[in-house]
Image 1 (cartoon, rainbow, N blue to C red):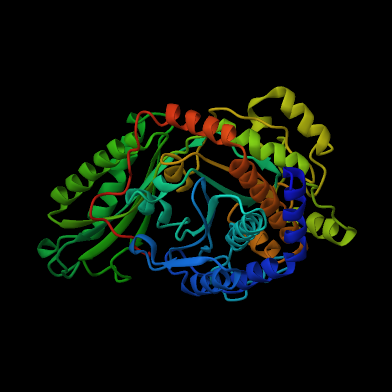
Image 2 (cartoon, rainbow, N blue to C red):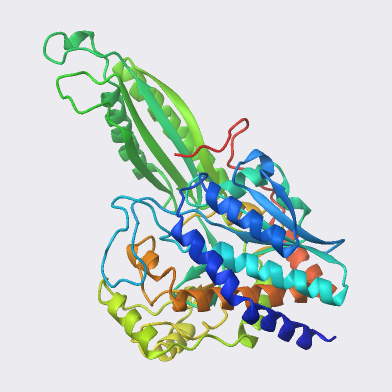
Length: 481
């Protein structure tokens, strides 16, 4: 069986089984769970993996909601990464054109991870099918990776060296474009500061009180002054998670603030985090309070692998993109009326390459198409985006690459009710299954072409030569906030 026929069989398998994988995605959508609390999703995936014939390992690296399913033997070992956590405050009814929570204040899949996990599993199942039919050596592993939105499951796994055993890792993310992801991003560290003071009557004996809330406020002021003295790639965000109560006539004895520190390189995030720690110490000294420092999570920046990006793009070109009917286009247009539209052409390449920007403008009909139903031109480069992802930690330990596919309308804001509303639509399902085909076909190329894998590994060795700086501190355990 030649490679072309093998890939056709993969596509046929995914088409024949699309309903099963789409129903799995919908079930995850209907049971949204926050980071590191994805117990229903974990059970659903483990059951699906066993029924598909994978050998399952639960509680990877001691994390309750992390798992993997393995099929095959020998090398190369291809890892396919799945996620399934939701976001708070984004409960939303499916298929609606306005904000309509199912549970006010409840959570929802505002980043499309219900699709991400199911699409990755579909790809892994297709690769398993190839290994069964061809008898070729090689191993495919589906990784259930919890806590991407907060918890950094993959980074904790990286600290334990899990990704080192892979020859390559592939993944995808739902989005509004069909594109191979490139470039790097910010690393990130989260720390919770829990201040403790002494309660007192705010009028009767305030001099006996030591305000934990004052400490939080002074810490925040100190960090504001720090902002002038950090490099332009750095970001510092915070949320006061406990104000100490609602009674102004009580000196608050407890207050907490959660900080997120970002810099392009993880080594710089670690250094900046230490400066934030010093500010917390100063705030405690100024207020006569104490504090507990609780490490939450961290992620490293992503190392791009241009060899894998080219391989993904080749298979993207060979995979027919979805067509959309009038009903789907009308729904996309209606959703686009609920948020501001960009006047910039979509995609990473258009941002950095004027010629690509010109091509994308033409393909998108000057950004008038409600759905980006075309493949973005290939763009590979060491460009920077300010977000963070724990896929970065994987990329420091094995060659890694990812794609996005259009699963919602053009320009949809991230982490929004509109994304949740799209999560069970045919538009979303079509993008998910397209991603599965591209990932599975690329995995087959890596299984059958030793020179491609060798080139990807050589590039990885060169780019990772400085060594992985793990953002996860010794002794830290995953914490569900």
